[in-house]
Image 1: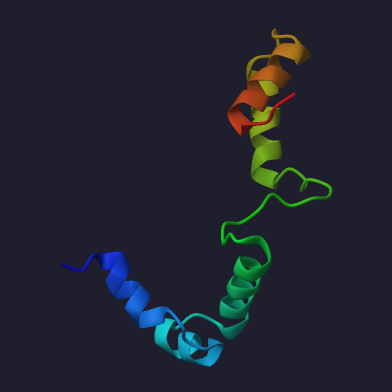
Image 2 (image 1 turned 90 degrees about the vertical axis):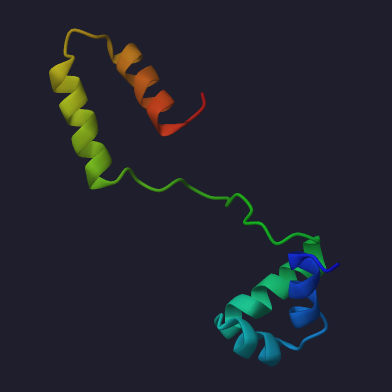
Length: 91
């Protein structure tokens, strides 16, 4: 009995990049990048990026301003803690 993963492997294993590109309808650089990552690291999952974090979006800024205005009696520390919790940030 064949499983779904066996069936998929039969279709894509041992194929060249051009064959995979056509078979999967995925852009050539994406196919090439995934294969390269697999050969170098043994994984295909996206890894955490290094560098400076992105700036807060306009929507996030608006939400922060609205929260501060609505709960102006709260301390800045408690608002910051709540915001970190909502954003999933750690200390």
